[in-house]
Amino acid sequence: MNLTKLNLNNLSLGLLLLFFTSCAVTILAPYDEVTDTKTTELQETIILELNRWNTIYQIKPDSIVLTYSNNLDVYNQSITKTELLLSRNNGIEKNKIVVKQLEGLLANLNEMKDIHKEDNILSDVDIAAFKTILNVQLGAIQKFQQVRKETNK
Amino acid sequence: MALEIDNLLEEMLGIAKNKFGDAYADAKDFAENEFKKLLQNTEFLARKVANGEMTIERAKRYLRMSKNAAEAVILTVEGIGLDAAEETINDALDLVKDAVNAALPISIL
Picture 1 (cartoon, one colour):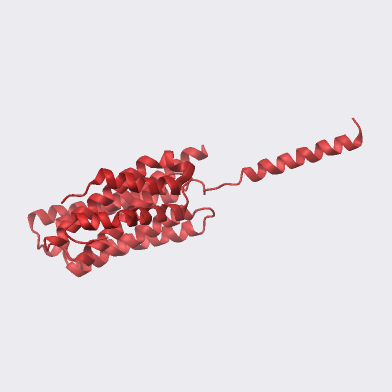
Picture 2: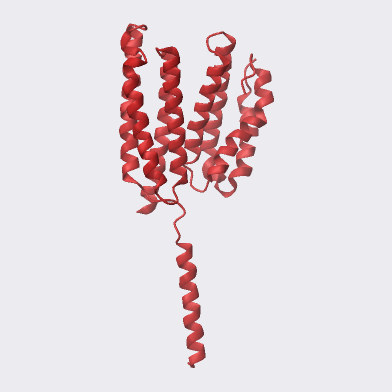
């Protein structure tokens, strides 16, 4: 094998390595345990509250326990947790999908807060609608993380 | 008059097929399920407004929330870009807008 042939082989190998290295660029951010855990906690908190409101509503629809001011903490805590998660995910590369999912969640939590503020007490129809919508959204965020977890194995 | 959901779904899935490209096979079931829920929600909300149980502004807020939820689901399918998910939902609803508004007691889309 002459020197020119060896150099060409090395060059080809180098180019191949470069090709495969560029193919290995991650398209999506890897699994994030914090996002997975925190969205699960958020779902538990919100759904628990919505169930509690519904139970009280069925017994006493005008109960003071259901008023906006008595539940402001639920919104503020959920919104702050989502904002923190959004901030964390904004700092992760190749993570626009999760950021978009969290932005949608934040928008819906704010809509829910505004509706509660306008009505002062949510009806059972409102509570059921919010429960369905938020379960779908939070479930989708967790599903996406689970798929990332499986893919990264 | 009730919505002819199956026919509308077919039209909406046509949009998804174009937008999603190779990812359509994986996304079809998700898109179909989410579109169906959006149509059912639209019909439910339009009837609430028509019966005087809800304002049109409130109904549109609920629809916006439902669209956010549908988008979150569609984004879970790998290979679907951010813009494609959002555009597909908007374009699919746009496509059936006239038929939906005509079939329901109130123009909601």
